[in-house]
Image (cartoon, rainbow, N blue to C red; front, side, top):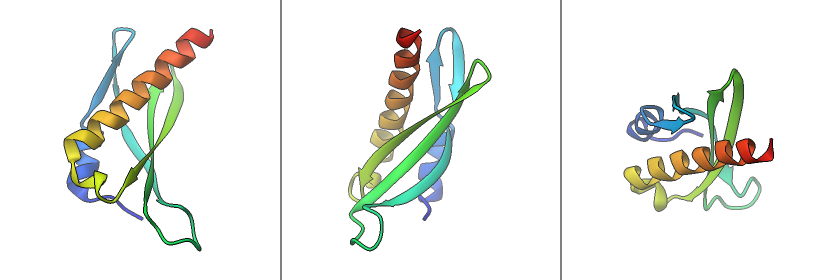
Length: 92
């Protein structure tokens, strides 16, 4: 399954600032939600960045309707990644 090219470009042009570094985002996978055999109602988008040489991934779920609002999708995945990076920092 694929996202529209403008949406992928929007996500992959976003960067998350964390600990003085700029972390680019990369779309790793897009999977139907829920998985087969149920009827698809949305997608699960897996996003990755590298922090301190280690990959960090997050999964964000969107309905088909939510995917139409590209700025909101980009903001959502960037916010989720920042939250995951902060969570890792506080876990140490």
